[in-house]
Length: 152
View 1 (cartoon, rainbow, N blue to C red):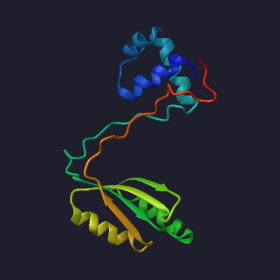
View 2 (cartoon, rainbow, N blue to C red):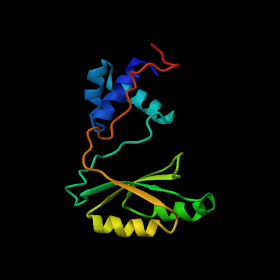
View 3 (cartoon, one colour):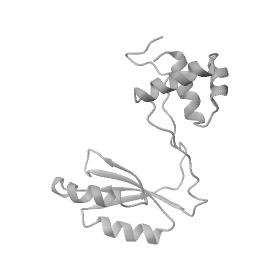
């Protein structure tokens, strides 16, 4: 991955819908050359997909929370299908520490959050933190940081 690939990735992280012509102008290449680079980055799975940012407040999801959950290894075969079916779970991570799962959830109200936590407790102990604000929202990766296999 060279500097041009990194610039393309940076631009796409800022705006995944940036027209090919605008990308090409920013990296001083032709549109077909940029298209070929993007296709290669996708084939190498460096670019895994494109996402839309949604304003959850405008859709009525006023509560964001992180839930730590202690799940016994024997319960994981039951837990994973359950949690994948929960549409209010926007992220689920298997983590180290006192709890084995960290969930990021969104709900319209604390009442729905409380009901969901009750459902989770059949899998184990929970600890919940409700988000007041997000000073650093989800963001892309700084591909310009030095990496051991970096091509300059």
